[in-house]
Image (cartoon, one colour):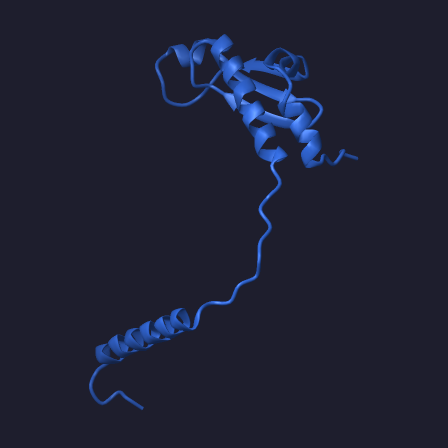
Length: 125
């Protein structure tokens, strides 16, 4: 069963240095596909990196350099760890204002009038 992480767990991973974070990752180089010149088809420059403790996986194929793509993967993992370490804002239930309800109903009435005008004469029931 997969371990459930808390905000604090992700925060502790996010505060690691890039070399320590890289030690916790498994990187795999592969051939990138898609648009580009012939260099895309011949070199294993794209990188897929997985942060083993959390299971976060990212892919980078922006650069023709495998080293730059590895660095970009680490940046992406770090950004995702930071995003997951923030607690989401608490949502509060709200009601629409009377004015907004009135505007919505007025617009529905106008729209219905436009549609009624499109009908053939004598088709009103």
